[in-house]
Amino acid sequence: MYDRRQQYDRVQGVYIISVAARVLNMHPQTLRKYERIGLVSPSRTVGMLRLYSEEDIARLRLIKHLVDELGLNLAGVELALGLFNRLVNMRAKTHELEGEELKSFLDSSVDQMLGLLQGKRK
Image (cartoon, rainbow, N blue to C red; front, top):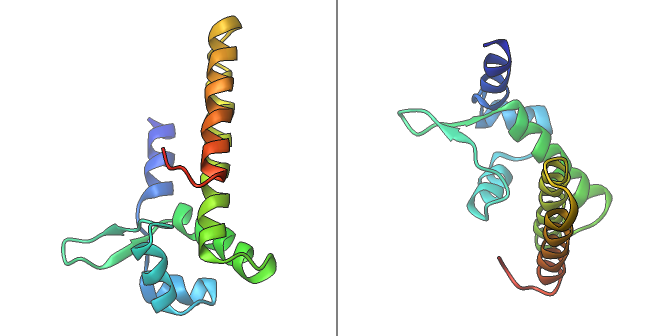
């Protein structure tokens, strides 16, 4: 039960857009833009206020670093996040598989990431 509560707290929206923008030192319009293009998906209240979770804030900090420090444009950010997400999922899945099943999964995953780099979406 404790693990479930921690997971719920981590994804539960805790910051409205003005507070999230202040915490991140970003303009609220930038946060709206990132949501519009699919880089972040804050939860919503019944009244449709955006609620940013700790996980959303961490993701936005990473996006800000990629843009401000590394100079990536938003297409580059989208590509970097896509590759990062695939690597995280890949690492988790490799712990469950063995032998030929593992080899097949890794081959497929690498092919998907190469496709992503070549501009093919899956």
